[in-house]
Amino acid sequence: MFFRWLSQLLPLSRSVESIIYALQGFKMKAWISSAWEAAVGLAYLVLAYFTLRLIEFAARKYGNIDMY
Image 1 (cartoon, rainbow, N blue to C red):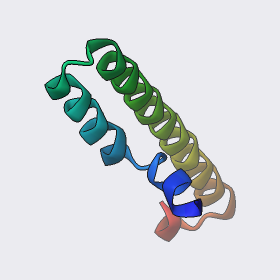
Image 2 (image 1 turned 180 degrees about the horizontal axis):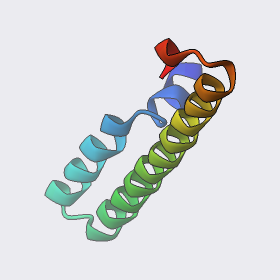
Image 3 (image 1 turned 180 degrees about the vertical axis):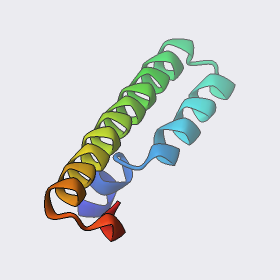
């Protein structure tokens, strides 16, 4: 059960699911699955941006350019 939940957080899982739905003719399910995939991708992008900003701030504060 844990691995099923974890696989839904990985980007490739919903993409494959969306393609399968589209090929089977379930257009609405394909669009919903694609929308969730876009939302997860956007969340990863925002998380990466703020993580890099945090690392940059720490590198500047402590004068450790190796972190950046």
